[in-house]
Image (cartoon, rainbow, N blue to C red; front, side, top):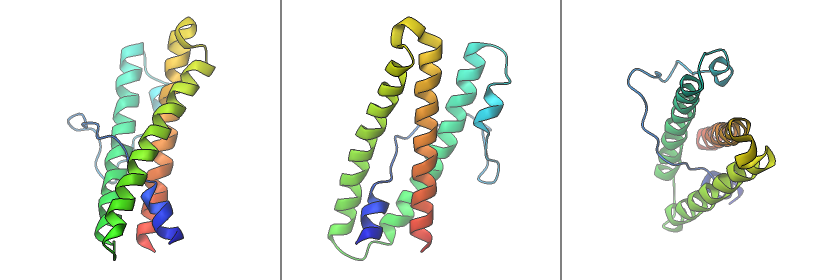
Amino acid sequence: MKKLIFAAAAAALFLPLSAGCCSADDEPKWEACGDLDGWSTVRECQDRVVAWWDKRLNAAYQKQKKQCSTAECPKKLQEAERAWIRYKDLMVQAAYEAAGGHEAKQTAIEAGENARYQMTRQQALLLEQLSAE
């Protein structure tokens, strides 16, 4: 049951990958985005990184869903997915506000996006671990 509860906590919004972004073996690095010039270029890079992890998370979620052995399992997994999305969105907003919100727009956006990246990455790795067991 613990495995199901943890697995059910994984999910994410589906963000389209930019053309040519990343193969399954070519993990984009969040840190590399900071080396780029221009705010919009950095944001595009960050969006590609999060989208890559989001796609990976979705694949792990689908794998876990297929491994369900009871009729209730997919329902619990979906319920947990929705709860996790709400939690993630609130944490991103909290990180944005804690970094100054509208008063410190660029810094706050970076904090919010970093939270979105970290949470999506952690959920993907957790669900992959659980679906491999």
